[in-house]
Length: 414
Image (cartoon, rainbow, N blue to C red; front, side, top):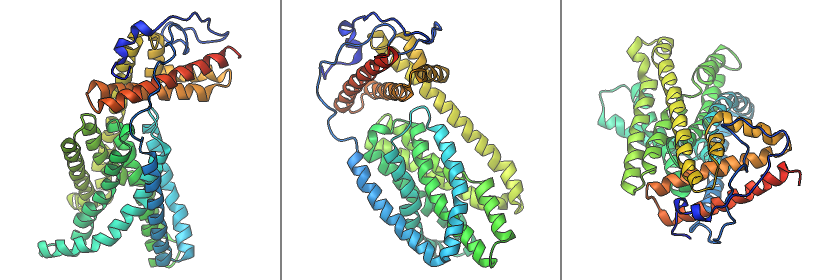
């Protein structure tokens, strides 16, 4: 069956009578999983060809962890133990804000924790290391190429955006290569790129807080000002810059092809660099007042970015409904299940229902597998990597059948 898609499965589906357990939700639009037709037992045993990238991710995690340890040693050597620990604690505040925001973006189809861990480690360790090592050489080259520009302009406005966004972007590009099966579109790109950027900002904040602490001779107004400026007013700055790379890669990865992906990476990188340059040099546009620049330009840009994320998430929901509807036509889901799986309200209702008999984790698995199936179906519809995606589709259908059976057993009190 490896050469068939779900549209050909209708003849293999059969109706199995099943009575919903007492207390199950009964609205016409949203029924609990397992109500109506269910798939036959799968007739295949083949696993997806090739790896999922997990082994490569583990190796990358190890390497990036070592890099982070080296960067942490450098920070400790520069700042001293007390300043290093204090500034590390302060840097956790903007990091927590960023991670909460990225978790909100990632709620529809959560990414693997191993990939997110690598993204954070790359940002906090390797990308910072690249910036520290390569930055001075790029700054020197820019001084030679642009002798008329002031050094205080070249460093923050030209060199930092170019080096930092390139260093962060390479980590996102690496995730496309090693976790391709979990990099499905712009929302995934935003999550991965944002996590890389959050890691970078965490380490960079330790440096900025430490510099303010040491230059002022201890706790005081200078450290408080830098903390409020970077930790409260602009915790998402790096996330917004690097998210452009994730969007560029996410758009092109859906269509596949090395040239398209390269073009998406370069286009996103240019946008990230320009955004970073605008942030670092934007106060010149408004007579040097950061707060005027912040409220007139950065707040609207942030609102625009949030609006874009919401629209992208809604597009993913529509795609989920469309692709799962194709499986429903073949008998793998009921129309009520498709509505449950493709709407936020339906998922909340299903989780509440499953919680009545201690099966929230099973329901969460069912939702995650169905969403992954819809995205895999999208790749098949786009003609991308058909052998691997069809094998992944078969495995997901097998997993959904097993998860559905577990859910029915729990709901029936077996």
